[in-house]
Image 1: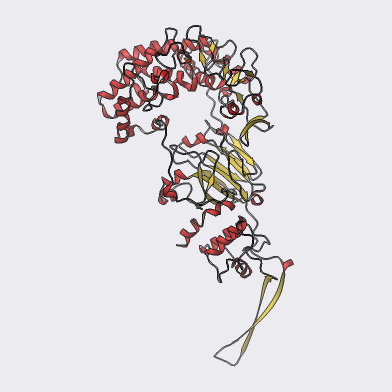
Image 2: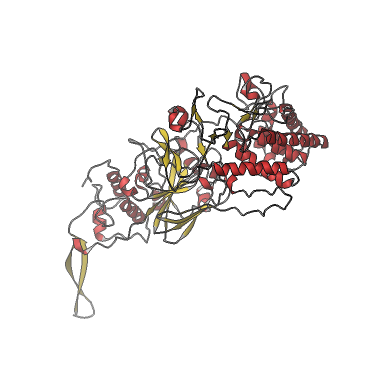
Length: 629
């Protein structure tokens, strides 16, 4: 019972956890079981498509497959974005935007592979037919079917839409991947579509550079999408194009034209890399800040011909400084990112018929700090968004690929010098251990986990996982996007290496992040500067003789009681609450001296109890100004 009690001390413990965490003023701890979360707007296709093949034969998957049939756009064969959402205008038509149509096709093919029900194959092929209809004679794909005269009719690379279609055509042409069951005639049509699509990419490439988000369906020139998305070289979309063409060129070594195109784009990415700056949250705004140690960045848009970073507002005005546009657009769009981090590491492809360079092993990103000797990130795809940052506290950005920040105040005095590990939110999708951490000093490590993850795990699952050596404090922290986190805490010895494991799930949650604080030195023995010595004489008489034995016991103790100072280090902080909680839980390593016990009895009720721990926490949190003794 005592172990259960310490695990659930009270929600206030987060105020003083080793990562200093944090609750809003007048916070009342909610009942976990009563927490309600908004439903997702659409189906999480990316999550579904990460499931094992056998899952697609489950009742859950087949229900979704049947819904794909139900919501297929009549007389078109594709799907709207937001499959079950009622749309009007252009968005009422089949689209490849937001992973629509391509995701349903893959889902249905996997359902067919598991069940061999013809209805799923037939529905998927109607979707493929829609993709054929959406391809122009020049090889490009429109964003939405049957929307002439709008920007939805342009050839669109936005959000990887074009590449998602090409990948389907590539697999179909070889009857591989999700498309082993298709007919030879569909395979042949896909091969022709693939060749046209690849050639269109070469024809659309901006001379000496990369690609735009969208290209005119007739001239193939860069064109505008939304008002603030001007004709430009766009790094976010171009990175996906390069990765596809790079692999395609390696598989087709005779296509030196593709190799030259890829090399040109790689060299351009290297040329426009931005160093020494970061785009960060500042209150309710975002700013560009100088930081010599910042990871390389790329602007989302570069002006064609000058390669100047390009920014725009809802009036389509041109700016070269992001601070010149409205705060609404500055904070509401991804103007900078790390889209080129993998592109610039690609080896240039030979164009003279010589053999390709050997594949280079992926380099795992490494970081170091004052308290963390080394952090090695296994998730290389998102590792560039990780980092080690100083001074954990309010306003800290907790993910490198999101703008979420810590939103409430904590015990700043305890936080002084603390470091935190800024992870990548998208690392939640990585199935293995995310990273390893080596301590430079004796540390207390805190891992902040989205409470929705923990609600889906039993205590047995946690005990069998990488968190088994942690104490679950059942406390709360909140981020600027309204998410709630709970903390797991453990000690780490100097030079010890520990594993930061998986996030357990990627669905309906965000990734965890972590913080470290230097573990205070052992202060369970009082210092002589504040003590006096008393001598107690005890007389013991044995029954076997008249001999009397006198024993002198010397005990060292402070001159006066300092309530709340359990470890007798002359201050009251979270380490006192933790020590007393461990002592109550019968932790043999939690030693409290006789003077410490006197100091700990501070709740106004004689004798040590859990009430003393709560009272210390209230004192540290400034809920009370003095102890009720």
